[in-house]
Image 1: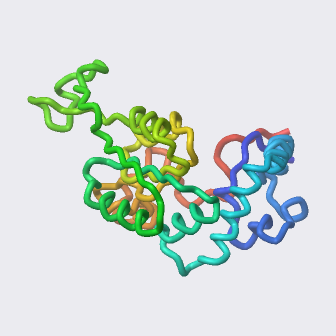
Image 2 (image 1 turned 30 degrees about the vertical axis):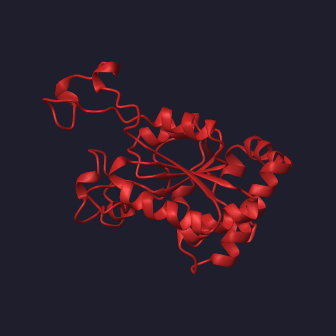
Length: 233
């Protein structure tokens, strides 16, 4: 008998995926979340009793159903915000996305929303202030402003943004923004300068053009079971 310590949905065969049919208990693999940690699922399910959580989940599902394969993500954002009754939307953008933020701000305002936008370099903090060396800059030899997602979050919090849209913040910087933002937040654009901000392309080409992604323990063929997070008894 194999017992799993961690959920491993990524390894569920396409022909199974029993949760879609409500059959996880009967047909799900041993690494299904409900079989590995039913207590955590129970705790999560109970959170939907919270009125705000329930409403967010309801409106998200309604937007998903109505706009499925028809609405762009920008349209989904607009519809979700309207259904939630939000009035003020924040934009936390990479400074390289200023032109896109300008267009997005205009679109949102055309739907009656108030918009507050803050670029990542706000505060013009030198990178040396957090003990980064000149050699650790993108362009050594001169002033380079620190990306400042904590201030982005604080400013959008202070100015009453009910929904925040993250546009192109770097890995880790977006994590800090989510950590400190008080309003609901969602990613509109995920930065990937190499792939035209389409990071899933690296996964689609992981066995060909981007084979360099694999580490030294690459399996010879896709594993049928999770390689870690399990114990036998």
